[in-house]
Length: 182
Image 1 (cartoon, rainbow, N blue to C red):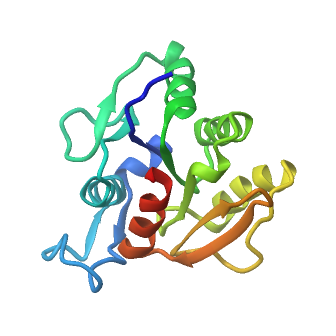
Image 2 (tube, one colour):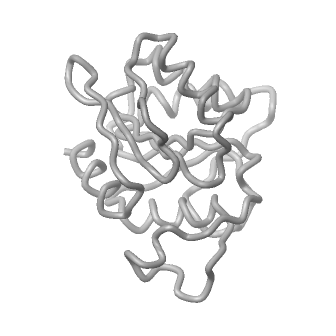
């Protein structure tokens, strides 16, 4: 097991090309010139700026800005993802259903990493896509948010997996990352 701390950022590759409005525009000056940005770059840049530790993701688009990207062949991406999930100090996953994110969430659950995971429900995910991801949590007996979680961040804490739902802001993510890396 690795002793190096890192944040693992998981998202479906289909969100790499989404352009969405920047909900952080009024709460921080990261992207002063664009009202709409690529969601992967926006979120990964935010995570890189607020995390004290390296941010890692699988795949990606080569030299685009953002966290460290580990490239892999389609045939062995699950092996690399499983190792990264197992050893991550913290995980951020975008609540957007795809075959790969469903597998990653199942792996997070089977590796008992649910208390180390922050779930983002950004504008890049449809209601149906978020509901599919929530079904995986519900099937595994985790409490799921009862109200809409668009534009929110949530996580589980404690032995009883209490659910915490907050507005998707830089400070809410940063505060939770601080607790995870303690």
